[in-house]
Length: 470
Image 1 (cartoon, rainbow, N blue to C red):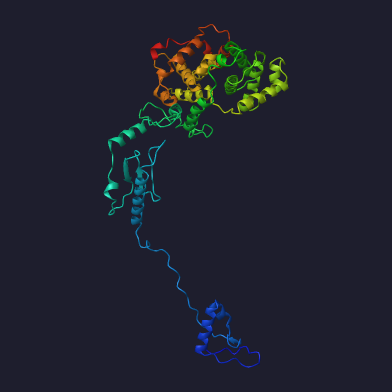
Image 2: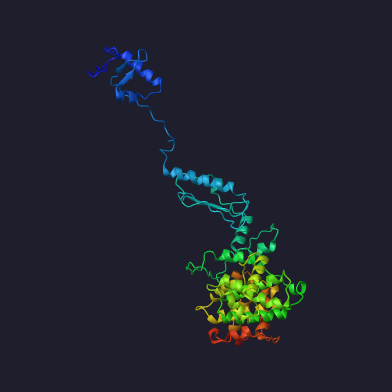
């Protein structure tokens, strides 16, 4: 037993504390443990309290007992990394079988890749697994034969072909038309289809999101389209010719204030949507026109004209208060839904697809397609056609007008417009009559606009017969 230090404390009566024996030291140590005290702290302070006579005593240096730390899960410490990759690959393969009954909508192929880069699985259909492969298969370790085997049934093959050709459609949807229109164009096997978004790296073009944006636009043009027969069904004091005169005058206003084409297209859209639901008198038709252009310019323009300028353009026929009042009425009736796709929205995309067949972009094609599309704005009868169909027909007729030696409709245009040449026949023939002005229309604002040199005088061009193209 170690000796007691000479600097011991005395009891209250001045007497020396009793002698510390080995048995007494063990008793004191057990008492400290039972009372929840830290033995290391008691040893470091070298003091103890006797539970019998409450006397301060000196506790000798007792070596502390170290408790063994609890073991963690070390069952895989000695395993090789190769075994770990095999287990992960097997687990992923089981996950593939677990997901094979999941309903796949837009993307039929499901790729499961491990953190180690060990395996990939492709699900070819809802009921069968088309292929399960391992990129890095460890030697000496094999998966089960059921997972290694490539299951390629006739159903899986046909499903994979339909996915590659972009023909997979949802048949159980309540609205089949919208499902067909909003279907994303798949990657075509035809080598003549050009990826028009591949070379565009400008962040302002949004090439990565373009397919999704235009897929949504195809759905929105159905939801936000105006009535095609509101003149016969609702309006009593105005006629289609009055509407044409108003829009022809608005074309001149847009040229006077140098507004962007999107403002003109949105203005016509707002006018038609308002007239589809609200009865209006003849003397307020021009007020409706300038108000809709005022709203569209504030939505599309960077520096929109002030309301006083729109009053001035009408020779002060209407006051500022009347325009503001009509603005509130239009916006409330349309529920402030101004983000609608117009013909100009689709025309940009389709012209880009049409230019892909040329080595150098042809500016005449863009001018002529825009000219043909704007001619349809003044015609009430073109409300029966969707904006995307009008834009595709304008590109079709523009290409045929500029080049009669080859068919104007290419696989690339068919891919991005989702329209075949036969589907455009009615619109193209009606647009050709507008181009030739077969009815002798006296509304010449658009024709005079595109006879200028800045548009390469495309209004003077005329096409050959188009019947043989369909």
